[in-house]
Length: 116
Image (cartoon, rainbow, N blue to C red; front, side, top):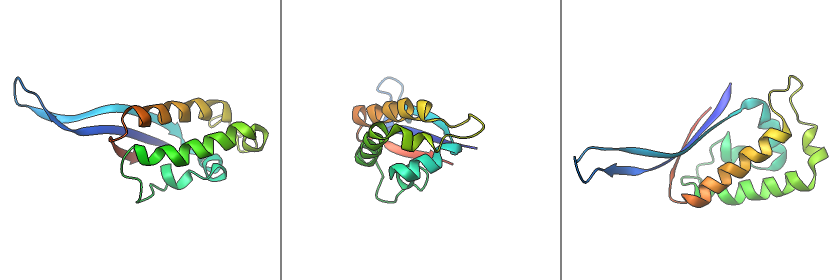
């Protein structure tokens, strides 16, 4: 099982042909085995719980940055939540979060689609 997150822009219409569609600007996948680490970092609801107050990518920035900061300050605390089977590790989660935060900053008005 995994968490799939996509950031998409509003439907765009092509000026040449008039066709439209939703543009995906970021897409990422991470294992559910990291959900306990997200709980400890205080951002589980923002991702897995899909907080109703989080509608646009800009809304993810604060809880993710706060959690990531704590994770980097206390790596040993968070590494205790590493998955025993190796699928869901601190060393993989930190860069994944950094990429997601970067995308949210680049596309702050993007819609969030989460599939868990």
